[in-house]
Structures are given as C-alpha cells and as structure tokens.
Image 1 (cartoon, chains in turn red, cyan):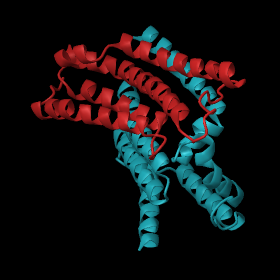
Image 2 (cartoon, each protein chain N blue to C red):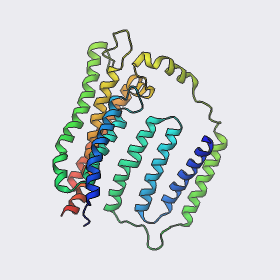
Image 3 (cartoon, helix red, strand yellow):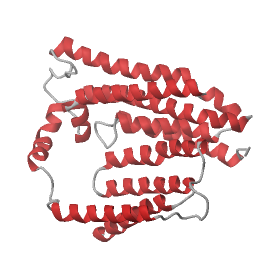
Image 4 (cartoon, chains in turn cyan, green):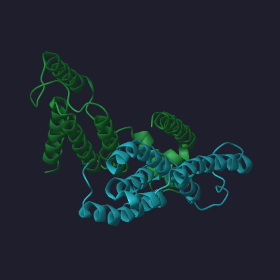
Length: 142
Length: 171
C-alpha cells in the first residue's frame, strides 16, 4: 500500500495540538462566545483523528488508546447526570441550576455542563471514527 | 455587495450539490459534499449564526467526510459501468420535481422578515440575567432547555454504543 510521506506525518503531528487547543477554547468559552460543548467536542474529535490519519503507525499507538476514550465518554455522561441530580438536591428539580441562589448572574452551571458535554462528544465521536478507520489503517500497515 | 455574495454562494452550493449527485465516481461525490458543507458553513457565518457554522464545518466537512470515505472504500467505488457522469431519465425527473417544489415553496411561504419578535426580545432582555451566559445559543440549550440536551446526549450515547458494538463484532 501507499506509505505516508514525511510532509503528511510532520504536518498532522504539528497541527493536531492546535486543533485540540481550539476545541478546548470552544468548550470553555462556550458561554461567552460562539461555541459550546457539542461544537468543541467535535473539534476535539477531529484533533484526535488527524494524527491517526496522518502519522506513521508506530507513533499512532502511544498517542491514542480506545480504552481511555471509552472511559472519557462514560465519564462525560455520568458527570452530566450527577449535575442534574445535584439540581434535585439543591433546587428541587432535575437539572436545576445549583448556583442560582446568589444575586449576580453567572454561568458556572453552563460552563460545567459544557465541559461534561465536550468530554462526552469528543471522546464518543473520536472513538467512533477511530474504530471506523482502524480497519483500513491495519490494511495499510500490513 | 453582501447580497451579490450571498447569491453567488447559494448558486455555488446548488452547483456542488447537483454535481455530487451526477458524478459516477463516489469519491468525487464525497469531496464535492465536503465542499458543499464548507460553503454552507460560510453561508451560516454570513447569516450571523457562528455556532451553526462551527458545527457544520466540524461535522459536515470533517467527520462526515471521513465516514463517507470509509464507506466508499469499504464498498464498490463506482456506480454503473461507463462514463464519468451519469444522467438517467429518472434523475432528470427528480431534478424537475425538486425545482417544482422549490418554486412552490417560494410562492407559498411568506417573505422572511426578522423572525419571531416576541421570543427574540425575551431572550435579549432576560437571557443573560436568567442563565448568566452572553452567548444566547448556550443560554437556550443549557439554560432554558437543559433537559432536552440531556436527552440528546442519551441519543448520542446510544448511537456510539451501538456503532461500537457492531464495529467490534465485525472487525
């Protein structure tokens, strides 16, 4: 099969951290500027896929582990659920804002939910895409 | 200037969409669909919807293209036998039908002016005070409608879990 050139290898490795950083920015500033958990999560996922597509196989293995992505997705969902349960305990109904007692408006609730959704979407979409391309990647390596 | 840009953008979007249906090589169609998604995200950005533009660029032009390329690679690459463009009588019929429906909608639907004002005014006045988010899209989907978002994450969880199950059984 075709081998991956140096240019592709270097470009994908150098570009991926910036894509991941942009994803984190979109998630953590979702309450102030355009972005949010879903958008940032998908950008995170594309930052994970980029080295998997471009890097040489021996470098890919230690970058990404399916198990960690699996845990990340479950953790994101559990975090969302626990925040909802915390709403029952503090304000009386599911997914109520637990911080809403203070006077000045603040976005802690939305910020934390964005983090949970970003983790969940990024890990989920990343895992799905990595599983999809794994088969063709193994063809290429062998 | 903006109107001309918008109309040119809409025309090119229409053109790429139509061409992606016509090409026989499915890889060409997939790349044309990626261009289609990218231009759509540009359109959303011009229409002051940057959140949707980011989603369209990341999902439509990024992840969906990857999945389509995988699907084309896993199946047979070209449809039919000869020629690079396929154009059958049924396709021309579909095209006429779509154009007819578009013309019908153009005459039936009222001209778009602004949108629902009551909701817009309510959100601009109360959105920040109720949820603390300057970005009103976040204020809606995590502040006012957080329960719907919870359901959406369950849907995504089910989709990813099911796909992982079938993929791991297959491979």
